[in-house]
Image (cartoon, rainbow, N blue to C red; front, side, top):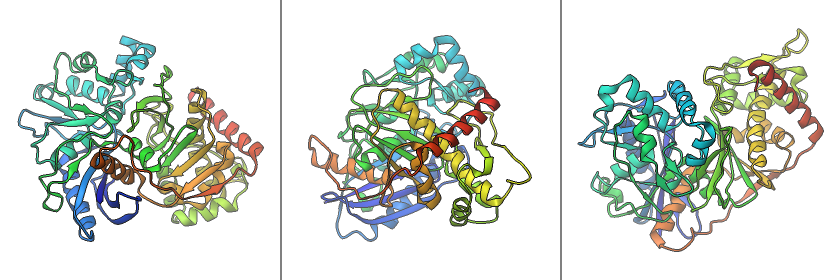
Length: 470
């Protein structure tokens, strides 16, 4: 049996055709999305069709089931005809920071964390809807439904004929859903939208069915899984269990694990999401990850491989340089207006090698703070799984273990979000109690100097506190 996993991410759509029995990837396709933090949902559908066309052209048999994983938090608003009211606001759009502050002032961080698992920041759907109601009330008046990106792509695959559905994983990132009860919180939604009450998708179980595909001939009749958020799909694709922490070095950075009980952190550092299996997914997200490496490489006139060589030619600690890498503002800590800062500069240490090393160390220190925050929630960490485009850097692989303080495993290169969506599709197709067991191969990296790692992290924490007081 063959299944299809779709990852509708910030930058592109990836599609993987997978053998449902053992998880082998048989073919894949990819199509780019427009850049920016405000995108027409139709662009995702165009990219989805192209990626599916590429992947499906090399499949030896019919596709039995499909699931879609998508970037979390995006605000997709539809009118009564199912037409988007306006372009979607994505997770990386920070214009709703004032609305997030207002919600916290009104309800209190502790109460919101208890109800929603989250303390509002500009990334979440709830704050974006509050921004819409305040700044575009004429558009807010037209909103009949609110969807998340993966919901919208799933609905398009059904030709708009099936009921609009979501899953508890992606729903838990909206700010108006209760992870503890698995129910929407319509009072928070109505308050954010100043009395308006849009309809919300049905929340399916982990192996539920969202109908069948009717909009693409090559997938016609395939069962539609519920889909989920990209981080939840990444966890499912890796098959993580208790004690595993995933650190994803993509456009954004993330550190997450799975737990049996919901997580409540009133500091807002750890988001108390649900996962895609019926458990929970405590997660820390940063806005800045691989883009730090890209930007530094561009400034130094090299590519990512060249940046890695430069970084490894510098001593640990980058000769005293520390990069606080908030190039696009930051979500964790909540500093939407922050900028990147290089500290410790002297005439003797301003070398390309030290700057490259400071970029890698600064990015990893921000993610190590996330791992530590998850540990403070009572999680006993036994290993870190490092994924995402940035994990392909040799410098990142070698430096990460000492900064994280535990062994790091690099799973074999794969599109794990799309793989997780495919695993969910296989689960929905078989109707079994648990998802299929697919093997995972990885490369082990152990810490070499924990004391040195602690010194680097201390310098980073000191610089961050001096700049921002956090």
